[in-house]
Amino acid sequence: MDIEMVFKILCGIVVIIMMIYYFRRQKKLLSFIIGAFTGGAALFIVNKYGALFGANVPLNLFNILGSLILGVPFVVFIVIMNFL
Image (cartoon, rainbow, N blue to C red; front, side, top):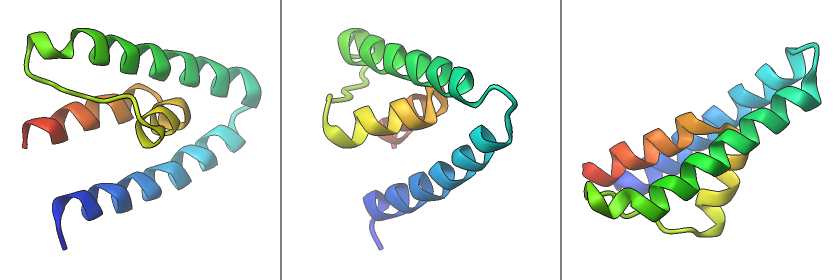
């Protein structure tokens, strides 16, 4: 099993955990919107300025959806995986 497959499996598990987290919150929609906004902003910043410190994170469907659903932890995880 290669590192990309492990990454996708871990992201799937984290998506399930985050969905459980969002459904248990009292303000579900607000919590999701704030998480999606911060994740999208973090992905945009890393995409725009990541080359300065060696993190080349492309804007593709997987990264965009992951950052919108999982938020900033997804973007941090992508950057860490980029250095491995």
